[in-house]
Image (cartoon, rainbow, N blue to C red):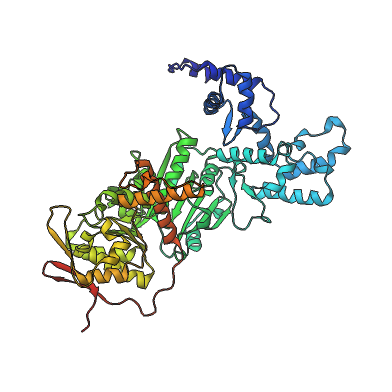
Length: 623
């Protein structure tokens, strides 16, 4: 292979002499440990390499890390990556308990018959006090059978015992980086509060026996579901032993599912079950399983309670396969309940399932097959995954929301793993607009209102806002209000008169538009109790930026800058994006927070009527 590789027409690459000098110095130096603090290593190498600065040495080390000659992880350097093999040996030893027993019995044997492999686990086990031996044996047993590494075992393990606590943390970080271990919070296995890691390097891709495999009953029992959701099966053309462990590690260590939202997680054999808490009342579930197909081929089963969560899982799995196992191909099937019975969609090679779901290509039609008789049907992807949006966007086509709405939609869909009802894609049947809108709002657990005077003058927008408020009062639907213009901020709405209509010139066309006085009163009574976010108004965003900058200066003991107090100034795209991203994070936290119980008396009866050319939203006048 090497001979063939050398014959390939690779493009020549010139490496700076300074890079090679740093590598040579790194190899020649005698380092005191497996991991060295980066600052200390840089100082040593600067002294050995003439003409090199700290910055150039760091740059060279980053390059050689990419090439695999060294490893750079956070603030640490591993000058000899092969030393990590000695640290992995005790974690993957085939019979850890036997190695412990050998250390107890070998002292009576002649030197020629002593088994050196016993030193690969806990070499000083025989010298420990009996009580400590019992504790270490229990942790070794947990590592062997549950694949869980306790922090308390590290000071006894071969290689690890010679490292400081800070070095151990760095080395564990490297193992996490390569998917060999993952921070552990699996239900039912955790010890007495010590830090733990799941050793995915002890797992393999051998599917369990059929009786221990995955079936739909396991999903229904875990998720409490009565109806079956689509089941995705990845069938690789071959199964490397590290394939499923890497996929497990990617999900169990994912930052996307924050710890505070991961309510329950269990790993039994080759089945990972996770319950996420989106809100106090709303939960999401997913399962990953390794099993065997009818022909004995290895299959990875993915099932999730929402299409947004399934999309995230499929994209993650396909990313792991492409990065860790390039060239590995797989067949992907989706089994689901169709209009005429159980169906199977065999996803083609033109696009991966994760990509299709990420692109939200819901209207695309694909050929599916009825299980049993082989009849072919042509269905939309939306119908296969029963893609019902959990978030509704109410907005006018005549204001700023048309510019910012698509961007906010994409961010919300990715971060909340929910589909968003946005009328440039959803409301295609104009003759059914009202019924579709009402159904969309009632199916959503979050409604975003893009508030503007144009929205309050629109009959359709008023209907959406009205239904959203009713659902908020009776069904705990979350309502988020984003101000699209300075005239609809909290302070400005307070100034509106409820005795006369609010008139304004339309941004498009310039004609005079009217918000009825009853609508103004309804808004003051029903929307001012909701936090109105002004960050999508440039002037308000600038004022908030100045306020934050002044607060930071005050904290540092400096006076506010008079130049900053001269609006309007524009923010850079990076500053604007960062502040709005922070606001979206705050919105997500707020909608996930527990709500008070619904009103005992229900919602007031609202009505929408038209008086001439003016739409009116208010409490129904029973008189």
